[in-house]
Length: 317
Length: 312
Ligand SMILES: Nc1ncnc2c1ncn2[C@@H]1O[C@H](COP(=O)(O)OP(=O)(O)O)[C@@H](O)[C@H]1O
Ligand SMILES: [Mg+2]
Image (cartoon, rainbow over all chains, first blue to last red; front, side):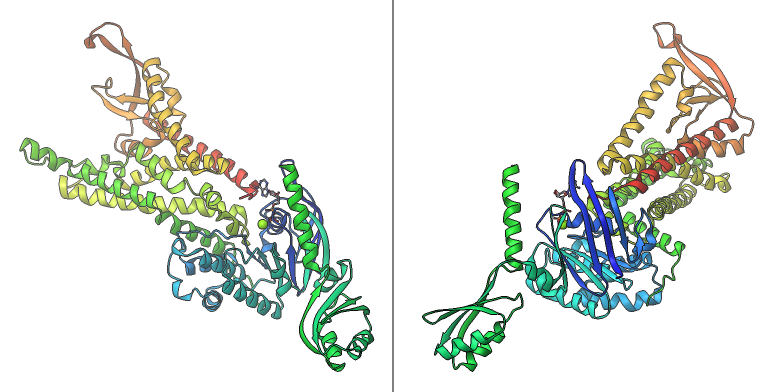
């Protein structure tokens, strides 16, 4: 298996603080890989090592099949990187910046002439391209930060908390851009402390806490690792024996509990089977009024993690 | 698929472009530029001001331009070094712009020398403008000028004089990652060499030390003690004027003096000649001093920058 990002035992310390602790990270090609963890988990630190801004204290790191080394710029020519809350030079104009960064990527004048207007259109900055970045709003700077990460047609795009500082509309746009890029064969590695952001776009996820990988895999695999049964709760009109029988016929159902109009269906799968349950109810002559999924989902694991993290923080205070 | 068709030179020039655009849009650079032109104008207008006060016509001065040293003195060189270089590395760290910059496929060495070259080009352009302005202005105010062909030497000298300060500011900024420390630290060094140094030199007769530190250097004179002869300063600030004087007077010997405060009245102050050396030696020494400082400080900054981890 060829990995686009592969770290083995990656360790990075700030003085005595171990920010990243023997981290094994593997990112497959052509995936959108979420790097999920609470604030201070070590996401930014890991990313900075990947792009050559920090020197690891231990372990090995290869990106796009090459050891990253120290001050080896060639590896970076196929990597696009959007820093966390990117700070861009205020004395330059939006377009000037993309042009200069494009040159640094080694792009010819012709390539820059084609790609830069496209990127500016994509992040909706075309009208402000000749204004100084210092005059841009935070959201505009964030969008320019995304555009500069995509210049030079990178094979791997690393986005550090791309939705920080964006309004909900902007977040949707960024998600669309990521999906679009993924279709074109670009591997995307994005960090986030927000579960729903990762769930909405990612095919793969690595959860990290205190510099250590908690779990990693496809979104499905990771969800499946969450322990405990899942329960589908439904409010059903015309609830009858026939309805319950139909639901019990579903292969992965372990028990069905009836409580007035409410039906609790315990299932043995991590897949979202709401539509199957709904079909069974309808087949038995019932009418579904509402339905939701309960149980230890990825969300629960993550919330649990956050709660633990907060508790240890309070203790250390 | 994009291929990397822009080679090292193209990337280096991208850094130069990045830095020059940054430099020339800095308020402090524009401020000092305005002040420099204002001072140059004032020195040009000096003749007119004097004639307005005394009522005499403006006296022609055919040596005005050649003595003007592109309109700048030691502090001018220092200030231009500060405004072009105080943010060069440290400002990138302070603003956080170092993060996207160093993540680009360019080596730190390319970034470092691109930035340094940009500072050099900014200075070169500025000093050229000042030189042309002083030359034309001098001609208009003080009449036809002698030895105009030697004026570019003052440009060359001004660049040497400034480079040494650039190297100091760059080193302080790279190591401390603070523009304030770079500026204040360099100011401290400038004040130290300019004021304390000259006191030590004059009183203790140890002026030769000043030859080896950046700035105005030791003071000597040609053709008699300081009040009577032509004063020559040996430091890196005076490379331009000394070069010109050497071409005009190749055989000049510069003598250093020590003050002997023997009596209580000013007439009893005595200048005691210490030693002499040819002007050519002074020039070579000051150029060597400027180059050695420049190379050592720049190499040290480069070493630090190459190893710098971006924790910002
Ligand atoms: N420059 C720094 N100096 C000291 N400690 C740092 C620095 N940057 C981050 N840390 C610490 O390292 C840990 C990981 O931080 P970071 O990688 O920024 O986490 P994340 O991006 O997941 O929020 C945190 O405990 C943080 O306080
Ligand atoms: Mg972070």
